Image (cartoon, rainbow, N blue to C red; front, side, top):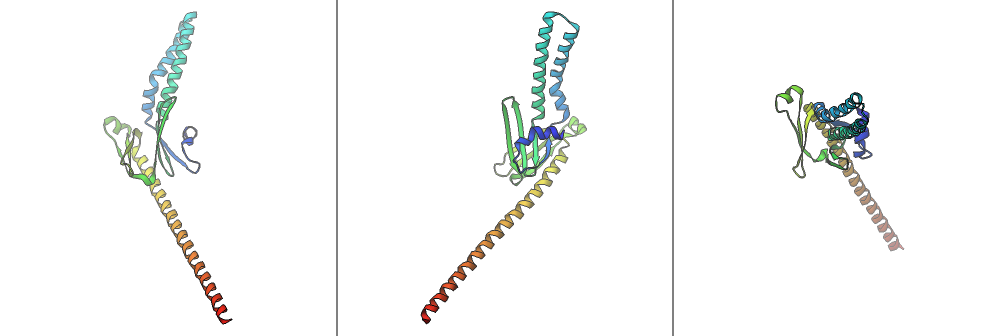
Length: 207
């Protein structure tokens, strides 16, 4: 599963980003998406096996091919609608069809809050729910439904958000120190140049 996630979702990340977790919808949603195309595919093979008629063969072959395309289309619709959690933020990836994809990136520094909701008997028994992230800059909320173990996902986001903000503060602090050090060095250099000029003027006066 990790290799499959890396193959499909690694391309959405920058070179320096580390893929930490890919959050998919509950596997029951996958079964729901794939039930009818799978049934249709096996029905086509049943027709090929039990109705060995020349005309039926071509119809069943086309039927099986269409069912297989339908199966892959529904599989990608389920599997590629996911959240990518990296060491820098969250990316909400949506797959709307063979030629239509959409993604929304939210950096940890732009997250105002993370929450989840488990609503209903089925969700409580099977342990899935809706997880939401609110952006600071716009106030918009991105959501992913039918997430297995949403509390665990929330903990992963909060933990990595804390680490990201800590590292960011350290980098900002170092950057400020570098600027101050450069300013002090420039000031010292200016003072030394000024002293040299004063010494040269004194020497000229003595002459």
